[in-house]
Image 1 (cartoon, protein in one colour):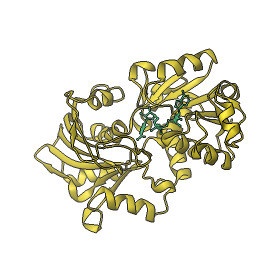
Image 2 (image 1 turned 90 degrees about the vertical axis):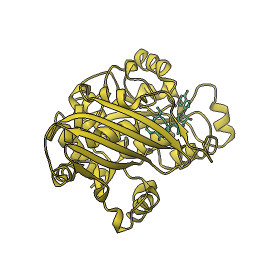
Image 3 (image 1 turned 60 degrees about the horizontal axis):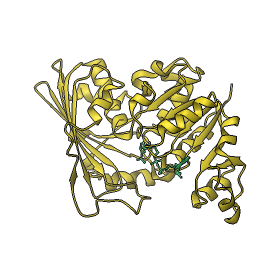
Amino acid sequence: MVVKVAINGYGTIGKRVADAVTLQDDMKIVGVSKTKPTFEAQVANSKGFPLYVLAGNEKKFDQAGIKIKGTIDDMLKEAEIVVDCTPGDLGDQCKATYGKANLKAIFQGGEDHELTGTSFNALANYKEAWGKQFVRVVSCNTTGLIRTLFPIDRDIGIERVNAVLIRRAVDPRDSKKGPVNAIKPVLELPSHQGPDVQTVMHSLKISTMAVAVPTTLMHVHSVIVDLKKDVKKEDVLKIWEGTPRVMLIDGSKGLPSTAEIMEYARDLGHARGDFNEIIVWRDGMNVVGRTLYYYQAIHQESDVIPENIDCIRSMMKTEPDNMKSIQKTDKTMGIK
Ligand code: NAD
């Protein structure tokens, strides 16, 4: 079975999901949508993706010389599942549209958990999305926390987690927002990421704080975990070594910051310079008594992309085994 996938919102996340779907043999893109005739619409065309537009904007694309196949409603008629990658505040409206078209839909982390009632991470709760009509793939930060915490909780046991998230100000493509010369704490405490992790790891005790800083490259998390058992730091490293989509690096080998990590991604030839893996500093973690300390870096534009692919398989019931789906996605996307 080849699942027909539409991407509504061909922006930062949408274009990456579209490319990742194209790499799979069990799903294909039947359309991507744009609201405006930007360079991204041209790129979608040149990649051969059928391009659909917001109704009423057809003329603008015509005037810009960009070929379109129809409106978003036309696109939905071609699909079995939509990956909604519109900006974070359109969820209710889009869900109503997909519901009317009798379609399944994946939403992104900019939407609230309540929109779908099911939030997703491939390693932690693949089966919760099984056959569902609406599921949300959690945000980049939440995905990062779950990727490293889930295997520790499974294999050692976690008493409690406290984490401070140092967030990138904006994505590299965004010239309109900041901060440019400020450090901006999120004043609502604890921040929303802790409860968001609990939408997937339901009984984990976790509190988070967050600060936005003037960088576009990645987020960094400082995480403190009270463990249920006495373990050595080597035991924790061994668990992460065996965890998909987690990569251990050494700061001492020329990777002390997010700047070098992004250069590393480019040197490795990763598409768009992305890092789908969560990056953990091997020489920046320690276990003291029963407390684990670590830092991790999150490439916000790309860590959620493989999760969307696995989520399609679970919702469409095409692969019952989460590890098989993860392995297939990772192999095709070149994730180590
Ligand atoms: P984006 O602004 O880069 O892209 C959004 C796209 O949606 C644009 O192409 C825009 O033209 C299109 N769009 C706008 N209104 C639309 C409408 N009414 N109908 C159809 N398309 C419309 O946004 P993004 O960063 O890709 O974010 C998308 C979602 O993914 C959000 O929920 C966001 O919170 C989440 N997310 C973003 C990141 C990130 O770092 N960028 C990481 C993880 C999750």
